[in-house]
Length: 254
Image 1 (spheres, rainbow, N blue to C red):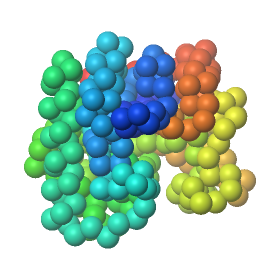
Image 2 (image 1 turned 90 degrees about the horizontal axis):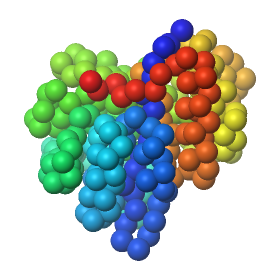
Image 3 (image 1 turned 45 degrees about the vertical axis):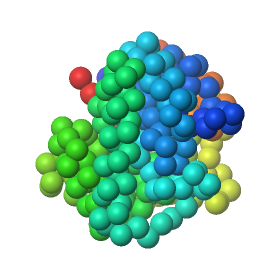
């Protein structure tokens, strides 16, 4: 049985007058924050505010890099050339590093967002572009990716440390892939159900898929999406249930 796990959330996604999620509240519950880098969400001022808040809570910061897709919130597939994608990722990490430094903290890992995250789980060309971008900036930055996905193996072969991730609020297929957001039942909203699934994940080594089959999932980190309705209550119940079972919530980066 797992004795400790990281709990992360996607934050810094507000933009100007538009507010997304409640960063201040969820930062009190998670151990790592995937902070937007301006390509799918996040204005400089809102990002800096989130970084200051994360620093105050002692939460580890990761760069949440994306396709250049503000209109689609980074959830639209894009066939980006390798050199362009590499440069996009380098740019985003660098931007967040500068803001983090100004907030008195630092970027400790990289996690792709949305469509980019899902694409590189199986698309070797784009996966290698993201890996090469991280290596070009800092080979010590771990890459967070979908548990069991090809990108994690590729990253390890290139010398990057990897973090396997499971999603608290998403449904899985029996093959370990995420159910598309376009399908009914892809996003879970019942906080108690979500918490029980994460306990099952850590105690039994997997979860029940949308097809009703037990699906093995090995995870170093659990994500609760900050923009999911009820995200605060989900994160609270996940943390409370796991801690009640003796499972410590702590960041994967020392």
